[in-house]
Length: 217
Image (cartoon, rainbow, N blue to C red):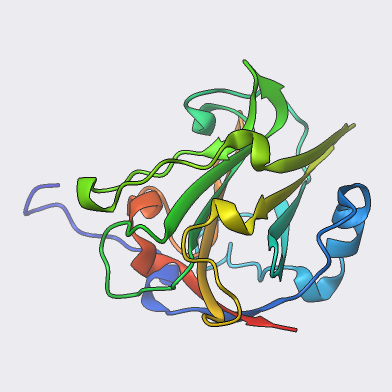
């Protein structure tokens, strides 16, 4: 961007968002999506502030054992892509287990997960976090992530469980806040964002832009 190019920001960038995340039993996985679909687990729709039209409903819950997210995408499934998951239908989830708003880069408490409607080359969910050298640690074992996906005519759903040991610093007993954002990608059409837009920021590497959630019973 040169000096004469105006910086245009969507309205979402002028707010600091704080919400509540409710507790839920993570097991059994088979019924988790249905249980998460209760309105109290649904994340707010910020698409208007992102200058977007929502095509997916996002639900989340927490437990001492980890986090769960359920996605109901009201779009026809097309295809998946890996390693560039943004080129196909996918969910990307950004987490900061300590919700640090003063950092302009990923700390060791930050995580970038992805989840796909179907497996490709043995990959359906995993971690792809970019760290600075001093904060780097091994990604979680993708086999520890639990996924349930269903494809229907004109829609698909994803349910993902991220165990606590897959998230550095996840400790609800002593830290009852977590930073969260997401990006839902589709093969055809614009993405859906939550607390920042990809065209304006590298949201996967800027935890200060992720919304704050208080973990409540």
